Length: 366
Figure (tube, one colour):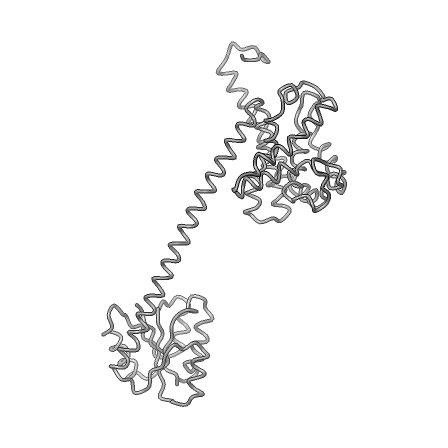
């Protein structure tokens, strides 16, 4: 336990230093002037301060007021030493944060009793602080482990959703990356941006309930099939919304709202404007961008420029204008994500061909 001693009288300082040395596990940190103390801050470490009230340049209260400007000293107990028994002086010291007083000349027995009590108090406070820090770390560890489990659940569900169609799995991951890029440019908190990336791959989880004749159809859907496919938003929300996990709740929110439109003409609930959750407004743009720039059985892939022009042109109707502006700012990052994904797909195709040299290009593997 380090005890700061400040007294401009060398005899008094030596006495205080000697008395501190008699306390169990205590070390004196003596200073002969307030200026010397201030020059040593904030690197100076101490657990208790014993300060003479009457000193030149700075009195004890003025010195302590300067010390506690540093947050690290805000909870340090302070004892003032004074020969002045005037109540005004003592009130000034109490208002500054004094926890006790020692009267000059200092009585060694009184010093031992008073300071030992405060040392015990400081030790108890330190133990509580250490326990609080330990508890904080344990809570953070538990929350981290829980979040890892949530991420694992989402990853496994994403794999399951893309089991019938590998391109669906890549689509969900691209949408997640695009969504995070838009969220960042929108100025959302880093934690929410990260959570949107984790939850976004679940936006189409409801398609697991779609019949293969609809989900894997090579061509445009009929009107009846399209209405049937629209049900995936509510189904996905229902699958995920029963969880108590905050991350899966966010995924449920995205599944339910990523086909809503800013003008209220979307589905399944015909929400409009800011009634649509921000996560859904973001993923709506990311999902549309990826759908348009990707080849589908019923259409060729659009160019990057044409797709961007399409999305910018629908700000205020299909898409939230603020999210569209964020999308536009995120375009360099989005283009880099898209190009990286295409390189990875090409590398995977090369590895597959190398592993099956006799396979005819385009031949379906049973």
